Image 1 (cartoon, rainbow, N blue to C red):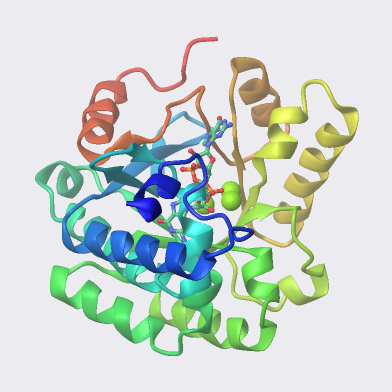
Image 2 (cartoon, rainbow, N blue to C red; image 1 turned 180 degrees about the vertical axis):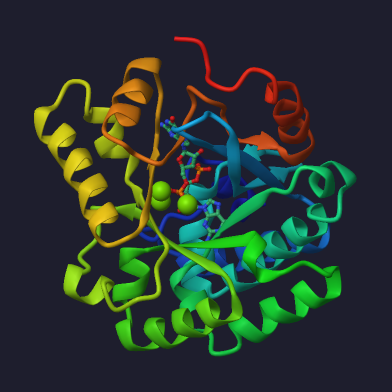
Length: 284
Ligand code: C2E
Ligand code: MG
Ligand code: MG
Ligand code: MG
């Protein structure tokens, strides 16, 4: 009972807590149950082209539909899942859900690229590419339908192993994206060596670009940098029409954010996409 009560707080895991290990054990048990008991949900958030407003892809974001706590956001359990290594199971679950979705008639008729977030643990797993490959085979989906998002910090945790993993995934046909770009500590000289296709400008800069001149400069130079390196660039955290417009003026390739759509359950996303087909860019 005590463990349950503590778990009902805002933070599912508080490392400063005295009996942290028993708390961790019970959260791990809950997470296992979540995967096996069908409590995880794959939400999708659209990525739209800033050239013609079409929905070019969607990012898969995990949600935990906890029987007592309701919809738990990822930041409340991903760091813990990282720490325990459980996140690898979660990645495979998300990837399998996405691969299954590719078989849906509505996706077959209007192909969709799906981005999946990878964690540090995934990059350190020498079998990741084999595991993903066997899921692709099971669902009959090509790797080119997927983009894998990796943060700079996940790469810099063990750059050499990350490079090996990323080279393998890229050879397999996956697109690779650097998430939260600008917030980590990777050097450009190093990033240049990686088989990356896309940079995602961190939402803190995008959200700040209206009011903070420095954020605006960071956004502008990141777009230029990406293009000079031959990469596609996505702005995340686009919350209003003014920012959307400015990004288009700066020749940013794609945008993602609440102004376009919040992350939606997969089913709702597919309806949203079908309805939007005739009304490309959101109203100002
Ligand atoms: P991320 O990969 O950078 O995902 C973008 C986050 O920004 C999502 O938060 C999304 O809901 C939020 N977002 C999108 N547009 C806006 C906007 O206009 N304004 C604001 N304020 N926020 C916006 P979410 O879903 O809570 O996920 C947070 C982070 O958790 C993700 O950041 C990612 O690092 C991690 N995460 C989520 N799902 C997964 C997963 O399946 N696997 C792994 N390894 N990590 C995941
Ligand atoms: Mg992401
Ligand atoms: Mg991000
Ligand atoms: Mg993030």
